Length: 126
Image 1: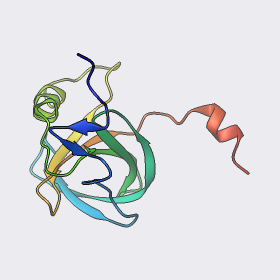
Image 2 (image 1 turned 120 degrees about the vertical axis):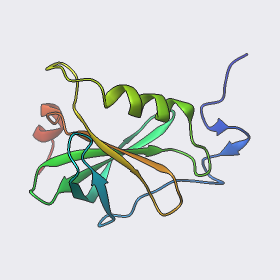
Image 3 (image 1 turned 60 degrees about the vertical axis):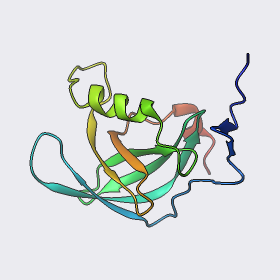
Image 4 (image 1 turned 180 degrees about the vertical axis):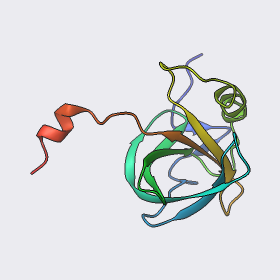
């Protein structure tokens, strides 16, 4: 049976969309220290089957990606597993996990280092 990518547990994205407004701030604990780091959302980056990704900046200006579930009220088990595994990985070929928190709706927010931007997108900017 084929699964509809727009439905999760009977909820459609139109009924319960998850969105972050530009300027939204999160205080996310660094998993390797006890320090809280402020992340400010700048713009959406993309959408996948389970998540939305946003470009954010830390207080020190370093870019990061914030990943949130695509639908409100659905806490995908994959987010729990991804958080646990990503927090344990440290390799030059794996994008570093920067921490996690919950938003005001108790939805998970995962922070990752920002990989380089696609050079083709850069060429198309005015």
